[in-house]
Length: 178
Image (cartoon, rainbow, N blue to C red; front, top):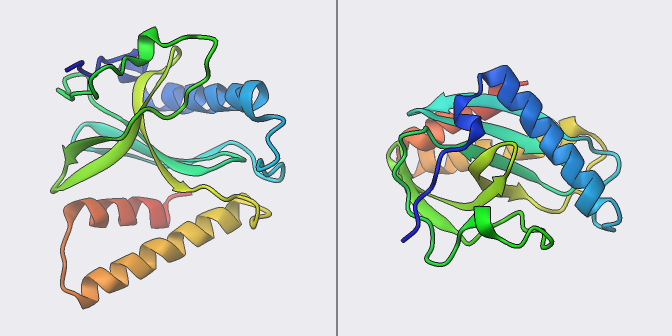
């Protein structure tokens, strides 16, 4: 099985990482999504809620085509990628943002995410959160909707007496970050 390989993002400080992510996704919008009818032109590329969790850096990324969580593993992460998937050797003429789903441990949960690769960042993981951006007219509306989802999930977990360090950490980071 191929293994995840660290890329430039593992060497970046937080400010450099945020600037690089914003630049990469703005360029992606211009090059690959500009004529997409599902794109919401009222929404910018925006980043919120950068956190470090067990050496992983996590952030929320808003784009005109989705809200997602990006996860950047630490340089020492030992993660297997699906057989036959090597994002660094894919056809450069074929745009591919999401690789096949991968499962990995983080805090007390198994996470599912799509591997992705951008030369300026290296390998990272994407968890799509909201894919229909048409109902929203501002970033605050999108993040407000996501916060309501988090609150509802947390209320249900509390009612069922289910504890999860991952959900508690993510909820704290995403509900209060701006």
